[in-house]
Image (cartoon, rainbow, N blue to C red; front, side, top):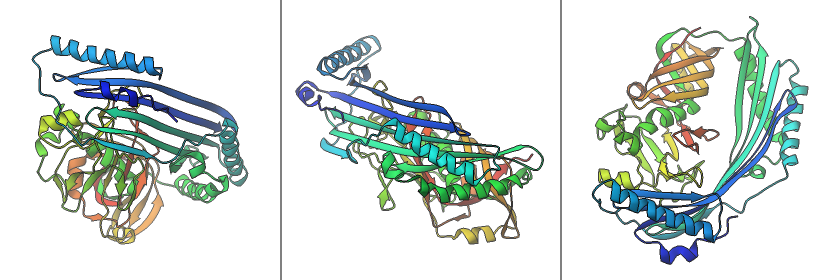
Length: 460
């Protein structure tokens, strides 16, 4: 755990000043067909200071964490802010005051293990796959565990510590289709917590791997979808990536200032009245969210942001500076990935809220369409135009699931797609295995229910 070297600096920070110490640590083991192709551990730590003066930010960091490093970073940040204020224009008002509070939000002390523990776990999983499913043409197992720990003080904000760990095991299987082409499917298993929180015994993964194999065999016999615009059900994982990539980014206030499509739509209908979309801070629907952010890196106590309510775009996500520019309250969305990074407006846990429909009723309501359940990638731009890869799905024929489909893509404009939503399932699923890539990587949570809508789908 990071030592507290920041408290003695409290009397010296005035105006708006942020001091942050941070450690990012990760362990990773990768096996390809039983061979170790990756075996790494990394740790990045240091401290930073950020000062807001006259409308400009001064920032400095150090790869060391000691009294002298903090002293140097603070002095440099103050000088940088003063220099920019002098050279770049007339002074602007300071940041509006926020609640000053003491806040400690760590799950527990850091849990660490020898690298051999991770390697043995991955090997046992891989051995099981090799023995149980000998017909595979390829397989891979990757175990990745990381955590982000921060100790910070902010002159007019929070004084606290956060620790956010996560652990995932990624399993990929490849088989040969009847036409000779390779067919692949992968699944991440795990979630929030340290390695021993998620993976007490490799055998707990075996039933999930069996389900993955069963899907792969169906995909192996699958067909290509018919290209065109059609009615589909996007399962929860796809709803989550839609909420994050195609909607969430357009509602980050710094990107709104940069010209995102959400700018002119505030307080206007952008979706079906059934759709409510929220960026949760730390607690969602009575349980802790995958990436619980109780306070952000500017010292702001984090709160939920209802971006879309009953189809109407109601809010943006803010840091303190963008909130002041818009005349809104800061929402606690300022996050930095490394000690050497300045905080940006970032999502935390973004999700479409569930509805009242049963998935089986949603399937039964479609005569000819597709049930799309898994994605391998996705991208979107600030117009909310998106394209997502689909790695698993099924035909829907006469209200029943049909054949599995092969890899394809879906595309469209998210704000147009959301207007076509006619049903939402009553169950919601979270995913948090990836990283958001807005200038800096960042762990995020995304989720949603199954969504019935219309979308463009690719063919062969």
